[in-house]
Length: 456
Image: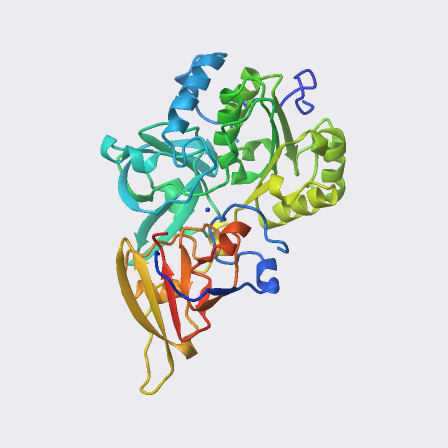
């Protein structure tokens, strides 16, 4: 297949060419310095309001694109309404739900670029309700390699479709999971897939006249693919602007799909490809995005006053840069959602649930947690300074977690007694913190007894 041109000046607005137990008020400490540092052990990040400091062309046409008549806004809107009405949280803002793994069969593995694939899982009807999702959410995949369990989270890249979940996986140098997925995963294989999670989405019940903007790099495009398609199909007066940066045309994931989406909504989708190692006609779209370039884009291409919501997705450096520049431009943080992507190779594999020896006479902390209505208690040595998640996994293997880096929010629980210190938080919203929620993978007891509830 011939490579698709990234665009021409003639295209409208296109670029050139988230207990029921009565107890004392829990105390949660979140050190400013810890919130400010990037996640070091997450394959992917989470969502929500940011902490205050903190080629190949695609092969073929995806089923969700082929199944819908081009230009049929009425059909698209009806389909979107039907799916979203049954999705998590209905038509309201997404609500967090318990994460559960089920074994799903791979229906298709489709090449996207030389180093990325789209993986589609078939969801049986008896599990369909567990896998309803909103655009922008993600799933975690689980597999054992030589006796070691690895979990990786990937954003869902297609708009909501009952009975199917698709993710895109980009191979990272030295990344064990992503390399396996790109080279060995095939149709017919069965893998554990977590039910969809995340709040990296829009309030989809009031999109008329809204302008949403996405800024993405590399595999950060995946949640925005689902979001852009859903937003544009759901409202005939909505607009979506996408700034997508890659090294070269060969590295652009979903190249054909993006071009087709642009052709379908020429007046409402503004698509700006920025290439760092390939010259474009417009200087603004060539080279790495730095503060100067982004400022110019906000001035010329995306006046901030016209934007209702911002979605930032990619590596920490780009997301932080965009947050800083938007804040400097006066954009309220409530309008900005972000998702951090770190590479498979960047993370060390923590030994969750590892044995901890309690010496005679050693001081311990009692950690009680409730999960699926059952309460368990584990003693943790004060000297170990272990996380609540690690301690809980020693007595309950089904305690939910995915990234273990403070970014995905899967291990969220509410502190109902005692005090903890949370070292990193890239997932919880301010209102969740105020209500006592913590990320158990990052929370360490600071009192003699701590009680948390995963069910609330």
